[in-house]
Length: 385
Image: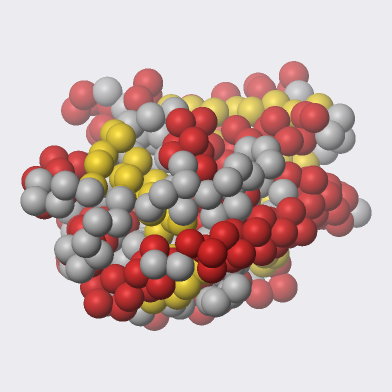
């Protein structure tokens, strides 16, 4: 099968970029002819002029549409799989594909179709105003990068393509990585009969090693990730070690917050393999996120490493976790609950080991690459027919 994959890369590499690269590799190994059409914000948006061009074309980018058309002449795809399209590719991509009769799958890695900041989070609290009312509500708060002007660009593009029927007419299936995300998308108006739940592929890091010591948190250091809450919780955990892996806009502030916690260390921005090594060197992993999110990539990677996870209740990160079996669930945003959940694993290494073994079994059955690849192939065949 000839599979075209489209993705607008971010300035800072994140989970979506990793998921796209993993999918390309996965499908190619399965024997498909796969090509990636990728644009990069770092290359295409430079200076004020680049930013203005991106804003002007967020609703419809004729230049990109023409580039895609020429690219498809060289690679007549059987199916197209779109990941992030905002702002450079724009929904003109979907019309270019549909106009050539190419079946389209759109993966929704976040809530960008419904929410200005894609997180359903405002002032560190869950927010559904744009889901329940109108995208223009986000402009009032400047939800996209703290800018009303930039948020208006997003709201204009989303509103325009809702009216135009782009999602109805040019997308055959929407893929969401979790049931949680699917429910939100349906509430926001996407057709329930076109939504499929399919987790992102997570490569097998290999057989788990014996559990290490302490806890690990891996991810971008941004307000929505809740690492500040974790540091507050850690003040009650005495000598338990905590390793924080990743970088982001909050790193300096978090390092200052942790200055009085000698058992906390920061690894900074490291390779993916080094992050997995840090998971393997810990006894359990923690995902303290404030946001609802759409998928728990870190959660599943920890399961693949044979480590139990502490996750917030009601989030997509909690879906793979059965509290008391593969991890412990805490009340989202509650420092005391987070500390208690972490203590339960820190003070009982035998329990943590047993939970980690069960987590690994769940990963192998539901989240390993082979299972995800088979589900993708089945989805592609269904829309081709």
